[in-house]
Amino acid sequence: MVVDARFDALKPMRSQLGLFVSPLYYVAELPVRAWDTATELTSSRVQLITDNERLRAEALLTQRKLQKLATLTEQNVRLRELLNSSSLVDERVLVAELIGVDPNPFTQRILIDKGERDGVFLGQPILDATGLMGQVVEVLPYSARVLMITDASHSLPVQVNRNGLRAIASGTGRNEWLELRYVGDTADIREGDIVVSSGLGQRFPAGYPVGRVQSVVRHPSQSFAEVRVAPSAQLNRSRYLLLVFSPESGYGDVLPALDLTPDANIPPADAAAADAAAEPTDNAAPAAAAEEGASDAQ
Image 1 (cartoon, rainbow, N blue to C red):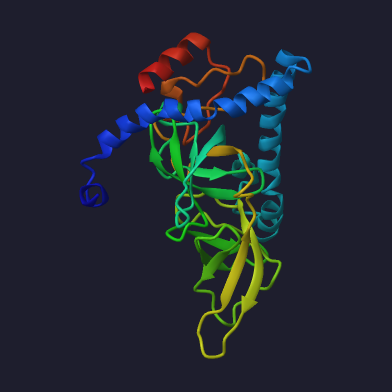
Image 2: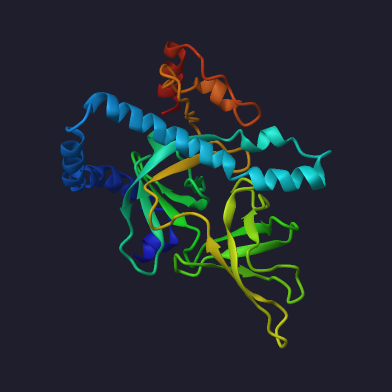
């Protein structure tokens, strides 16, 4: 345990163990999958499953864009000459499914079904349909572990959407609320204010909802106010998540793109993915070139 905590010598072994354990997660989910299958047999099975997957992806993408409407409105008023609003909703995303939760009550971590083979990279932001959830802290071949924003060891730079006030949102070890640190006792912040990611940490894209101010307690004897924020994301209920590939956090070695057209399940070419941070590529690349580029990236 000491070697694993202080050095990276056991990282390859952990990666191989993760590859070995992945089938166990699949076997553990078999009862749930069997029940879902039996339920779906009462309707048009093939068509219903296809439509549900497509509509679920569409709903996630639509709500992801809606998250930024309030932020875009405020930024257009204050910084119209400096911001290019269209670029703020152009991040590429990949839909992932939650397959496990860390049983440790002192750790807020989950396991998702996308890994290194899908282009997932360390530090990649994760969000659900309502707000930011966390970031990837461990990448395995076919899965990845995500550290939630409510974990006691996690912090991210945020700002109040109403006036741009900057602060640090730190986890408390509880899913119910976050803590805003270093907010001055005289700062202009009030209950109900929306808190969004500021993008200053070069990890989370700017403008995504983090939470809403739940309480503000000012102590005359202290320099900073005690501010609690209720997370926007449904940390205990969301099953389908979005992996964000943004210029702020980096794209990783492979850049999967989500396109909802029938013939668009083709990954972009490896050469095009290398330039994706500067300009997103067109998803209509030929299938042969895309498959060759994806195999080279792996």
